[in-house]
Amino acid sequence: MMMNYKIVLDAGHGGDDPGATGNGIIEKNLTLDITKYLYDRFNELGIPVKVTRLTDETITPTDRVNRVLNAFGNSKDVIVISSHINAGGGDGAEVIYPLRSSNVLPNLILNEISKEGQNIRKSYQRRLPSDPSKDYYFMQRNTGDTESLTVEYGFLDSPKDDVNQLNNNYKNLAEAVVRAVTSYIGSNYTPVGNDFTYIVKAGDTLYNIAKKYNMTVEKLKDLNNLTNNMLMIGQILKLSQDDKNTNNYIVKKGDTLYSIAKNNGIDINTLKSINGLTSNLLSVGQILVLEPVNESKNIYIVKAGDTLYSIARKNNTDVNTLKALNNLQNNIVSIGMELILPEIETPEKDIIGYNEYVVQNGDTLYSIARRYNKTVDEIKRLNNMTSDLLTVGMKIRI
Image (tube, rainbow, N blue to C red):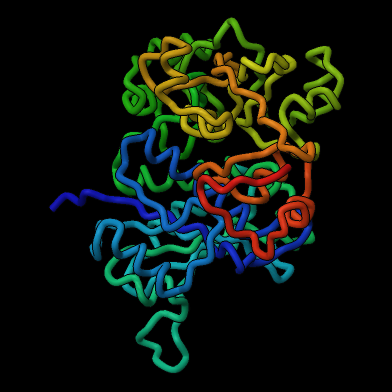
């Protein structure tokens, strides 16, 4: 019988439980960012998906499990992805899976994550010492028949490159999970944006790649200037024509920020600033924007990982408004695309000279502080707050 898979996403920790912290990373914040990215992508791909939390809230283990089981019921066709960040000085990603499940999906996830340049450790099960017939971790033990996985994307205290991966490439790591899940459940996978690339894997042929993306072999060869049908593992294929109105670069093996900047006549610091990079680390297949972002307050330049939903949320609007303003017929956006944003009124100042911000759905103190270039502690002191908890509609002085 064919399974009609559904996805439940769980952002580890939250609220009063920050999880692991270090090197500028707070686990509860990063797992929420990853979960929001996954939520947007599965929605785009038409796969039923729900989440345990989309805000910075405290959830007890019992409540967390209840939210998992109440999302789509207790069923084998429910896949649970609980996102976490490791600590303890190790290096690389790992996946924990329940005793009732196989290692097929966990290994698919690790395989896809490795393609993003992240080291991988292992997929494994762990038994409860007092009762070896049960799982050690509650997220596997108490989630019924669901295929409940815990994905540890890396170590925030790694002596190797995990910190850079987590800070700069977490969206790529999350996208790897999307690829793995869609492959596992047999769902069509569409890469982010319109200017797609595909990395050739063992067993691939031009015919099966073309068939997968609903194009002809001739079109695929023409896009990539191929004169024969030979492919190499790791080769990057374009799946759509470059947008002539954008100036983007796809990172190839051997590239460095210095070489890309030099070859394209741009300063390396400008290149990092345009793409929001905090280090010189690159991954093969990564798309870099080479033109400075339009600073107009009414224009937004689409970046890697963006979706209409995330752009709307970031700019305090909604998807339908963005589509109407930009005459869009669907939710697809491409890197470098310019989107017109609605006019946003400047927050009114209160009687003692502060700006007043009204909390929106999905806001956290951390995201608000970052938006206004403040610290969480500054905002809490100004508003006499004793916790990080927010409620929609709450008014905060900035």
